[in-house]
Image 1 (spheres, rainbow, N blue to C red):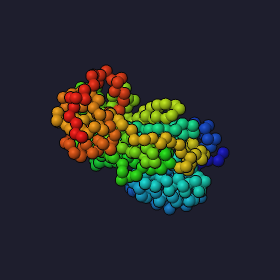
Image 2: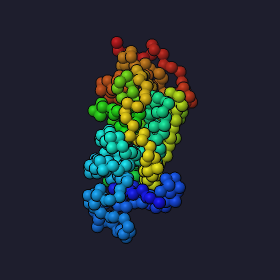
Image 3: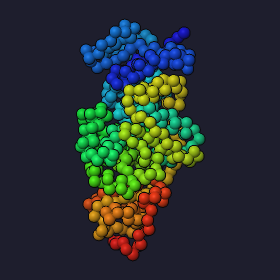
Image 4: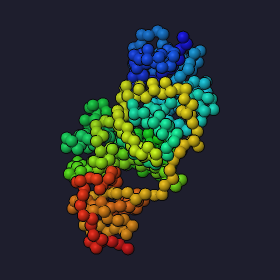
Length: 413
């Protein structure tokens, strides 16, 4: 029986998870693939930090030793950073190897180029593990795109931020104390900037945009806001009103422009993301035929990420992994008006007539209906906090109340 010869780049948490998963489930993989999956080489950055005793596997810090192996079918990228991962995978594809990556930062920057090269060389490129860990969002979207048109995607794509917001609300912790707890548990790095500022979620949103729309949003036009400015007072106030803060990445297409945001929003208990807590990730998809689909699960970790990589290995022959952008389907929608919560000194707040008051739910909180563009203008001219509200307001019992009458609102014309 012939074997599938695999090289593994990186032997940290994810790399170890992939190695152990393949070794433990070898018989199952043989049944599915009809071949043995054989890891023939592992690349590490510093040899002296590892103890390796399997003489049948090349353990090296030199990528040239790997790319020149006589038998090499698949290269799995489990390292971090744009380089050297991009260069390594480009060399592997040029050699004719199938590749699989969990490197979201690299793929957000160079995914289009790698997909094009993979198509040219007639090899597959798997990237399920770049978004939401063990949640099979990439394959789900690819299958949906066969018939459905995806209207919008909203997701909690970073477990660290979600953990911090959960602990602040449940245990009355300050942001600083919740972050420290996340670091103690190993959920946050010593430098947590990418997680708490939304950079990690943005990279994942970029990858999803490629899958759904066949192109990326304009990076400089993306709205990315972190959670570091949220206070315990704000979290407890909105909790008393039946709302929870979530750090949500959102994608949708308006006319020819892809709108991408990563920011703290408020969700009602009718929204699928309301119950997503701790380090869980979740993605809500709105499509024209199937309607709403929600996927939830572990967004990171040794075995959830390894699961996504091994599933890509099983799908390695699926040439849709290198599908061209023009095959993607989408809705083109006009700019939509959404519900926003304005928090702060609202008694004498002057609103233009294109921002409609929905209801006042607290002396310091009023709900309005308007577009994101008008909210941005409002935030720059007033010292108030503005949070989008996701979910059906009319279904939320806590938020039921009489509409504020127009004559009681101060407008500036």
